[in-house]
Image 1 (cartoon, rainbow over the protein chains, first blue to last red):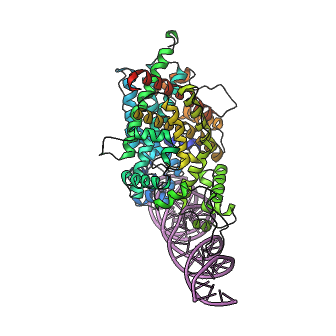
Image 2: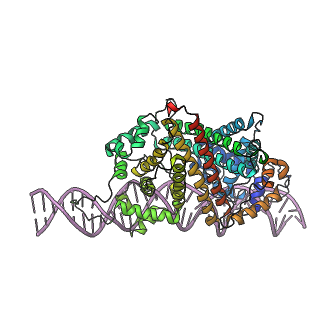
Image 3: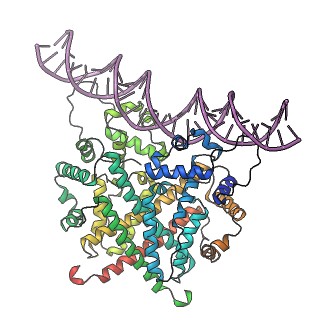
Length: 267
Length: 267
DNA sequence: CCACGTTACTTTACGATGTAAGGAGTTGCA
DNA sequence: TGCAACTCCTTACATCGTAAAGTAACGTGG
């Protein structure tokens, strides 16, 4: 996990908020730059999308651009900053404005599903620390979208902020589970099913008194709580997907209750 | 992030479910063991508690026990396994049974607060992958506790499982934010306040048209949504704490709605 | 009682990683 | 024309997990 906010604050904010492509006719001495921040970001994001955060090394990014790792340091102060820039730039994908027509419930559902899909397309984003937010333009654009939807609830501003954060936590968490399940599958070479089968066989062997020790868990299992229907989707992934859908419904119902409890004049 | 389920499944499950202390009078040749899995786990956990996951290296654990890193490999197959064992053992802290008397709502609240506190005492736990669960006895004990509380809701088993997962995701997420905020503060040497102050100063400098570009966010800010009262607690940490409290309430309200919507004969 | 095989632990080594330091070569302008 | 600024490279260092091979301690079968 890497943190933002190290290094020169001015330089980093300037990089984040710079209008891309505004190269401004150069008149500086020295060999003309073969790279640019944008080109580096493209390469780094492509690499992270393909090989995950673990595959994102300075050497690898450099190699993809026909340079050494050290060449990147001309354009970007260090890896943490590079990550911040990647983080904000990829969030441009979420910039598509959502129609507020359908009411807040439809709006939040659509938004949550968008963000969920986004995280699964770029799982490395989940590994950038959420403390010390990056504060780039595209992150704000995403926040602006939810803020707009939540505005329609009529809840007081503080409540809205808290609910937005809670939604984020939840979406991030469930998406992270899916992403890690996929990583685990490809890293260990074992599918969810193979892994679970071997593991539960060992479990009965090593803890024969399981049902007596954990009656509630065993009860849930015998009631079929852990049986999933769709066999085309890996087990853990399907479970996380269900958690996402069900949890989102619970959260939305809870928000509805909060709205109902707020006196009309405070809305 | 490291994954369980690599390596020998039998060996790993045996280590997890072994009754600790049952040394069984040894009759093997060779020098008598100076260490034991338990001693190694104690040292490793102490180290992780003090210096976080980043400080947990095989060399450091060895040194704490007066050995080299390689000595550990006599007792534990590799670092991933060590982490799994640490993970399960630390969960013993949560084994304290909760009274189910107060009803499910009080029970879930107490449980969530317990788990939240636990994660903050041992933040490294949050860095062990949740996909491919470890399946040790203490992890099951914790699950047993929530399962018992949720049993009281009368909801069908599948719904109970999904809600339990959703609660976990949420508690983990908010706790992780606090933990990362603390890490960031000590890693960068900047307090939340110092960091935020410098950053937002840069923001107005670099994006003077902020209010126009992000009217909803700016609106929330001017309504005081980002102002917190308690100045003794670092900003980000307090914000996460609020998110935890508010989000938990929303979730519980949502669960209440789900219970009300379930036909009595299905409970 | 003693050699043998098993076991605990050490030393050394390898290929990763981010990045500091210093040097080589290219360019614009005084 | 020379100098300063600039891009990019090579080399080097500490740190990581762990493979390989060696050393010393020990219980036991002969």
